[in-house]
Length: 403
Image 1: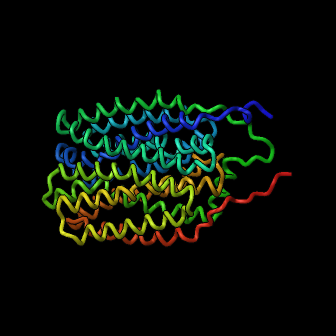
Image 2: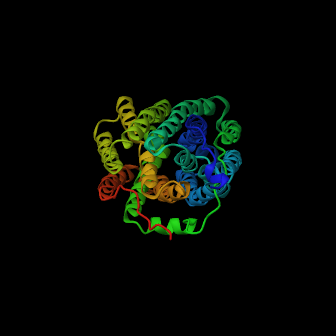
Image 3: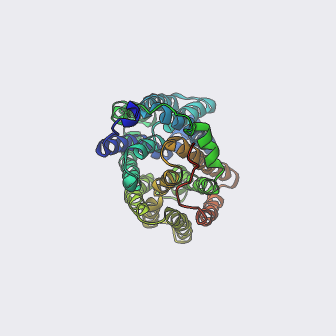
C-alpha cells in the first residue's frame, strides 16, 4: 500500500468549519450584487441590460471555469485553487468598482469574478467533503456547508446595503475585496494529503467525464440544474428593481434578500438531512415544483411588503436546497474521486441557466418595460425540472473490475 493511499483523511469537524466559512464568504458577497444594479447604472449612465449582461457573463464564466477548477482540485488538492480564487475575487471586486465602460465592467464583474467563484464555492469544497466524510454522513455534511453559505447570504445583504448607504457603492466594493481575502488562511484547513499516483486500470479524468456524460441520469440531473440557475439568479439580480418599479422602498428589497438567505439556512440543512434518508430525486422534483407554485402565488396576490416577505421566506427554503441533493447524487452514482470536476460539469448547466436568468431579465425588461414574461418563464421551467428529475436512476454505477 502506498503512503498516499494510507494517508489519514482530514477530520470532519475541520472540513466543515473551514469549508463552511469559505462558502459563507464567497456566497455571501455575491448574494447582494443586485443591490448595486441601480446605483451603478445611474452613476455610469448605463442601461439595466449592461449590468445584467455582466452578471450573466459572471455566472457563465463561473460555470465554464468550474470543471477545470474542479479537475485541478481533484488532481492537486483544493488549497491552490482556493488561494487563486480568493485573489481573483478581490481583483474582480476592485475592477467592478473602477470600471467606467460597459466592456471593462463586463471583464471585471463578469469574467474575473466568475472565475473567482468557480474556485471558491461549492464544487471545490464539496469535493473535499466527499473525500473526507463517510458516505452515510456526506449528504448531511453538504447540507451543513450549504446552510453556512446561506448564513453568509443572510448576514451580508444588510451589511452590503449598509455599506452602499454609508460609504458609497464604489467604496463598499473595495471593502468587500479586502474581506474576500480571508479565504486564503481558511483554505489551509482544507489541505488534503496527496492522492495516490494513478495505477494501471485506474479511471482517468477524461474517462470519468465520458462515462458521466454517457449516463442518462447525469444528463437529466444536469438539465434540471439549468432551471435552478435560471430561477435563483433572475430573482436575486432583478427582484430589488422589480419591487422598486412597483413603488416599494429599497429597504423592502434588502429585507427580502436577507430573508432568502436566512430561510435558505434551514432549507439547505433540511434538504441535506433528508437526502441521507429519502430518495434525492424525489426531493429535487418536489423543490422545483414548489418553486413554481410559490412564484405563481406571488404574482397573483396583491404586492405588498408582507407578500414580498412571505415570498422571500418561502423561496429561501427552496433556494439552494438543490445543491447538497444534486452534488450528493453525483457522488452516489459516480463516486468521489472526481467529484469536484463532475460537480463542475453539472454546475456549468446551472450557470448557463443563470446567464439566461440574469441577461433575459434585463433584456426583456428593456424590450417590454416589465418583468412579467420572465416570471412566467421561470414557472414553466420549474415544472419541466420537476418532471425530468423523476426518471433518474439513484444507484451507484457498476464498473467492470480491471484484470
